[in-house]
Length: 46
Image (cartoon, rainbow, N blue to C red; front, side, top):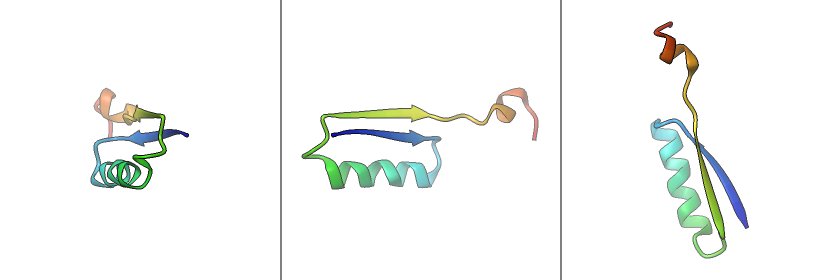
């Protein structure tokens, strides 16, 4: 099984990653993390 987990550094995304690890640690062959960044933060906008 392959799993894609999007993370953004928030408490919820880290919790989701922890859950994936606990639930699927024996059946996952590949875990891909996609780090998501809001482009408004990079531009300094609100």
